[in-house]
Structures are given as structure tokens and as C-alpha cells.
Length: 168
Image 1 (tube, helix red, strand yellow):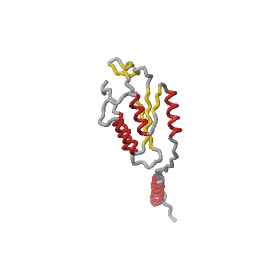
Image 2 (cartoon, one colour; image 1 turned 60 degrees about the horizontal axis):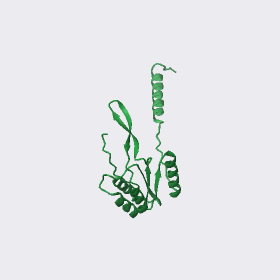
Image 3 (spheres, helix red, strand yellow; image 1 turned 90 degrees about the vertical axis):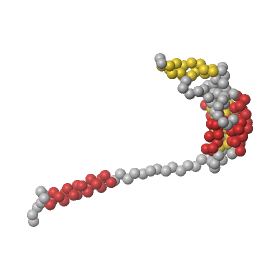
Image 4 (cartoon, helix red, strand yellow; image 1 turned 135 degrees about the horizontal axis):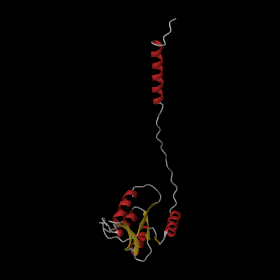
């Protein structure tokens, strides 16, 4: 493909941590969903997990795939899109380590049903009540009617002064 087959798990986690570190919420969580292994980036997954622990952020890692070492991947060819089985290199020990260090948990999803069950489990583990404020922008739309009324009044005045003028 055009993009190299690279996964920067540590860098991705560091970006998420930088967004969450100043949050005042009681529960700060990152969910890492991956089918690969860290093979690029400047920050190691272990370093990112240590950083998450420092800021009180739990990382829940989810490894996806069949475990067979291959996954279907669409590839663009001159004749259209072709789906080929590409090697998948899931690094489960690193995913487990990230979760353990940060106070999260590691899950393995092999299909859509197990992934839905994992999200439900994480939801049960991390319940937090949130209060939000909703802001609504209102637009005053009466101005067009004021202009129309002013135009009609002006027209009525002009007609009474000229064509429809009555003499007493």
C-alpha cells in the first residue's frame, strides 16, 4: 500500500495521555484497540504506560483478530479492490504489560460479539456520573418580517399620497 505497515502504540498512547492528563474527572481511561505490535515511534509502550500511571490514567488494551496470524485487508489494484490475508503481529505480552502497569486490563476480542462484551465489561468497571451543560445558539429571525412590514407601510403611505389620494 501507500502507507507503510507501522504501528506507533507508544506515541498514540502518549498523545491520548497529553489530552487526558489535566482532566478533573474522577475516572480517566484510555481504550487501546489494536491488531498489531509497536514497530515505530519515539515512545515505547512501557514508557507510555508508566506515564499514564503517573497521571492516574488507566489503559484498557484490546487485542483483536482471529489469532491465526493473518487478517483480511483490502488492497487497491488497477483492477479494483482485492481482499488479501495479510500477516498480523499482535504483541499480547506488551498489551498485557501496558494494562498491568497503568491499572487497566487486557482483553482479547476474536469477533464482533466478544468485542461488544468487552466494551460492556469496561463500561461496568469505569462508571462515572457526568454533568454537562448544553448551550443553544438562538437566531432572531423577525428582522425579515420587520423589513417587510416597513416596506408595506412605506408603500401604503406613498400610494395614499399619490395615486390613492383622497381630497376632503
